[in-house]
Image (cartoon, rainbow, N blue to C red; front, side, top):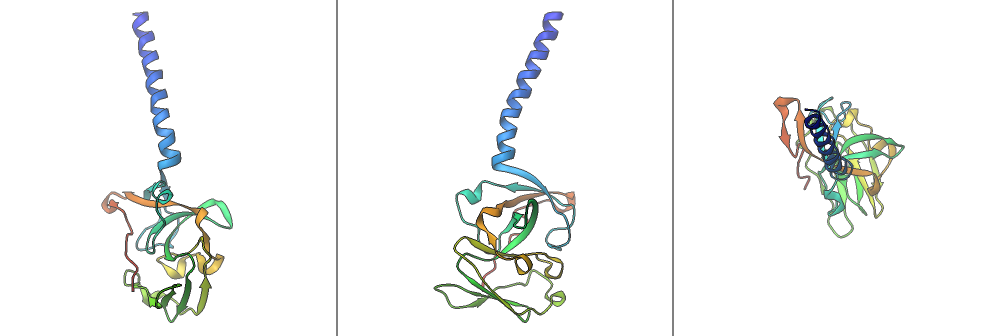
Length: 185
């Protein structure tokens, strides 16, 4: 009986070590949980929604316009935000009369489609932002409640953590690739 108990303890320890060897690298390098805090992405993401973030994809491909990302706040890297990519590297972003106009290096200017947000609640803004070669312009979907590139500047590429791949909570809002939209002209 004593030998059986010892085997059980040994097997349990082995199982726990193997589980840790699998879970820790996944958590640190591939995916991690994220809880939405605040109203900056309403109605796309509500406060306290639980997301799983893909940290791997952006090591192999560049973020795209319209992607929802989890990022480090440039003024406090310990703080994480959820925002949507509006402008890509080397572009000029113009906000005017509730419109966002993209000026690319080799393309005609175009106005992005914002039909997925409530523009009636958006303030008129008139500003121009120029992005560097590794900078992105990000905004919250709830424009009036969002601290984003309009207030703290362009987002360095290095501050992008990943993208949400699944919304797990609340249960009635479970969704794969939540918030995905295409922001074209």
